[in-house]
Image (tube, rainbow, N blue to C red; front, side, top):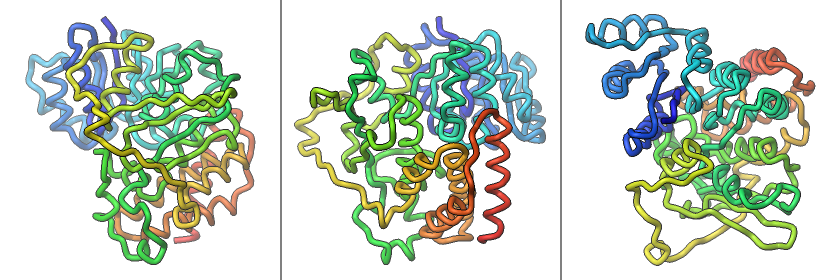
Length: 382
């Protein structure tokens, strides 16, 4: 039996992780979950999976959840960042699924790493902001990091039979989002509703907007650099609108391995939970003849400048990726709140980056300082 905790059980990755648990209920036990505003879903999850611990970030929502639960429910309800860290460190849990979105996932993920837990990593911000510091900490505490993102999972799988030193480059595929092929003139007037219409994947609002700006791919480039210890010039981004090839690896002999499958996040989640073993499931099989055609394009870095900014942040190093991430997180919220335009996301990110002098990351505090600096700087540009 595998015992798991899910940071962010009510979000897209969290709910799909629970779908995987349902498929393998005789092999996986959920011992802890967390959420924030969707307390009705948390209640339903508690009644179905009977975790021993549940964290609700907001204190008032935690009290509401306690009152909603029947007297026989034995799940302990905790709250706030302290509760989230307690969940990440929970002694019964072997695997921590970091499905929580945003910088809020950094502290609990680092806490789990320091307890030597296996990290099923779906929180991009952990490596985007922490980079080598996080990877070195994981190595120190012997905490395996298994990627959950479909692209990084694909690369991870392609590398299973090969060493990193044999890699020539990795190929990260991008769907192109809802605005693939559009120019800046078109993007000036797109709405929040337009940007949330992803053609292939069902995801949370933040990651869906990031997919529309190609920032999601930029963050994945940064994450891939640290996950696989590769320089930016060995990471290629290719637009692949069908989302069937999830990513690939070209080796020094110029042979290329790629991982293919239907766009279903439950497959890489299951792989991360059972690694290094593969398990049967009831999900739909890929038929290449049904798909028919796979196409590939170069990304438009001028129209979608967020992807170019990610490469720039990587080259600058230090705290620059953390600043880009924090700036983008704030800008996406402003866009979702209809306070800035779609193109403002990239423009403000660029201004914030060019106002920053990166510093070496040697602690969690340095990352948090960069985040706070970014918040204050953005206020000047809005």
